[in-house]
Length: 242
Image (tube, rainbow, N blue to C red; front, side, top):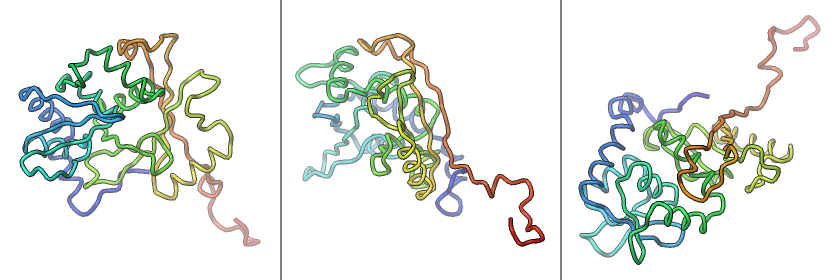
């Protein structure tokens, strides 16, 4: 299943303005302004200027927050989005009572979401390959991924994140056939391909974000098999059967 562009000219617009370029511009402006985010439960709040607001929207990081303060624009970042800007792009500082170190923020994220190490490895795996990654809870998956901005193209993959070699996956997904079938049918009904990312910790713990370098990711695309589409001869036989 290939990309489904939204309207004539959308693909050309995406090619003319690649996501890698937009993210690089965002990284530059956040670094220059010494941006600081504020921890707030399972999200990070970021006060931004007009240029940064536009770039955050174009790069698909976070969601704008409507406030009564006309001169101040705020964005709400998810845990994976905030840590990606903080740790990988190094363009955002994050604080509560004080500025967090790598290890302090890593431990905070894990305390908020037990599966954060695996989810973040999967998120960064896709983001570094210039996929736009958004929450997939409305489709019963961890993420959905887009080739470019959602205004230009529909999401192509519904992404599930599983731990390779774990007897009891922390999210408990795809352990029985009924879950496989239900997930595939849901993905098919919304024209998405199921992409399962298996995260292998390779015997390394998760005490610090340095462990991410040792984690590996295996991509598996899962699709329903159609007997009719797979037949070599699709013509009708003499007795009328196929």
